[in-house]
Image (cartoon, rainbow, N blue to C red; front, side, top):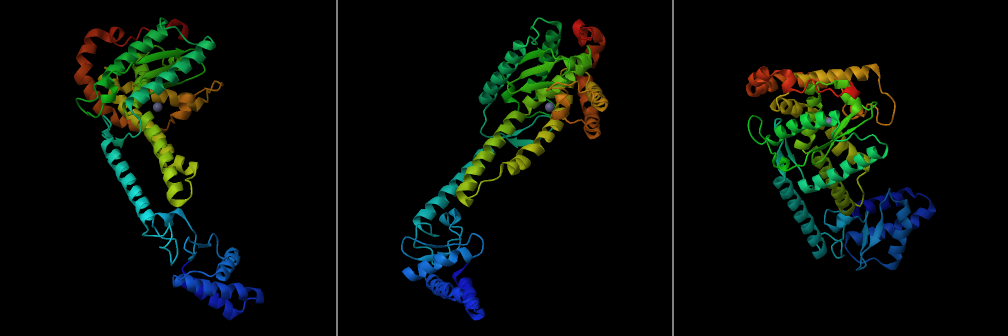
Length: 403
Ligand SMILES: [Zn+2]
């Protein structure tokens, strides 16, 4: 509130004669406002009166006195410190006044920080293969992703092994997953070239690993950063021995790595933490966590799934698996969801919960099929026909115990 408005308010109070008690503070306020408006030093009496009147002022409006004895009206916020106003008239002699050396330094630091952040954002931009989406992965390096993935993968394996549910790598189901997954991963590594080329440098040298956890009630698969894939036997039962449909799932998971979705989310979380620090510093208030989640994380998790679907169809085709199986797999999962076969257990149908199945999602994949089928036929059609499904897609490799 400006000194002039305070003066007018005090004069109105006096004119209305709002109680005898108010006349004293109001008059003192008028004098204090006058002194502030004129940038003159406040007297001890006016300072006391201003302090007494402060609780009567509108919400969070305060009167405060700077180091040189000038009284200011209005909230003393860090905004004033960086010179965005709010210090009230007469400010400028104090440490937080606009135009002071301190405020200029702080404003310069803020501008430098914002400029550096913008430059960093620009340098971190990448193009997602096949979709062409431009994104900026900040604060997370491929090495950090790989390290996080190794830790997560080791924890999942340790937990499964502790309840004797981790299938050995020599198990037919584990070998099937590793073989199909290996072909998909090899295709993902080539996403930097050919049709739909994008940034795929982070795929070089990844140590892809696969684990199969024997939990028939869990229709799920997941991937940790760096190419660590976990498949549950509930999902393997669903696809039977169909390598094309298994490839659809593994291509979806590999797409999360190719699109750097983990890093994107982690980068957003780090950005949100930084923004929160800046908001506290500049505005004096933190940004609520729920707002950050709604604005930065939740919308993107759904978008990430749609993108993994779209990229997965192309990866499956490039790996010479029938891309039409992606649609069949989605419909199969949707049917399970419709039957409500949750199967119980903490992880039951986790794939469905984290990867919402909608008619729109199936339709979106169907719409992408022509381009995927074109690449599939161009690359693999003749060869597959020559070799036959049995030799080509490991169609007969359905592991007995899981059938
Ligand atoms: Zn997914």
